[in-house]
Length: 418
Image (cartoon, rainbow, N blue to C red):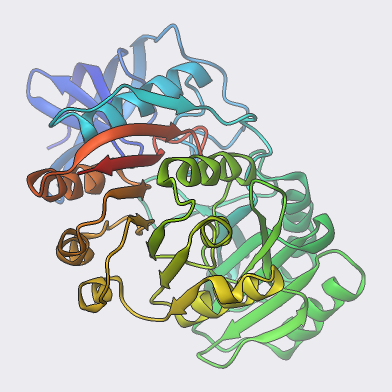
């Protein structure tokens, strides 16, 4: 039954929920900050977790700020927008310290984002046109409900302009439900990718072509009802290496959302890998975020990526940079590392949020001198470090990156050595 409780916020969980200590145990809510005393209305348990609605902040954190977005309390995208940037970075540092703290480890070095607004070069929104309404935006916190987003202050200006263009040109033609992604394209313009399992009106294709023809976006791709994508203009996403070299990802492929911080992330991973003159194996390579830098340094580089489109993009990027002969790209699952032969000096891996559990036996079996683990989830990082430590590896460096301001998410680069 619903009732009211008071409690103190202990922490913010990975997904942005506030962890509140009350007289009746731990309760999860949204919108409260660490250290605050709050009044809650409790609700039903979901997934074994007792949840509550935040009614009032009785004692506010000195780090609380007015959010820069009027939708911050409704949209699920920026749960920490009311927390001062330095306090956000401190929270991320604590999360990383908890992830690497089960054994000997150096101090965590944190790199903040140079900007907390206008930083995102990639965003995934959803649309829903059922029930007589046309909504395009982000999901509300812990909900399938969509919050309509006319403009988003964390998007790069080119993407925010594209969002406005898309709302005018594409939203009136969309049908049913689906996803709409925005990414950074060529010549400083955005690219748009629409995906839906439902058939769409023919007008959508003309509207997408018109967006490209008048220069509102660099390219558009429509993947509708399982058909091959229809493409207009140049819909690939463009990213940059630390030296400014342009790399390309598939229209709806993964690319880091914060270009400025990604350059710092790549530079740190390359530094810690010490790949100069070494035999290197890269796992979960994607479109080659780290590959080009490794290929330019390593004596021999083997690259593994399971997604066909991403592996093709990686090969194309190497070819455009004249590095094809310096790396071999395989489209295989990461666990094939155990079946490959020959000594290896360095293994660099950048797994998805689920971690690298399936690849760890092969990594350990290859006995590299150094392992550079790029992580986007402290929980799976902590899990994966345990067997590596048991195999005789020790953490020698931990670098954290505030890739996503206003969220609890943190990127990390960890170097281990035997």
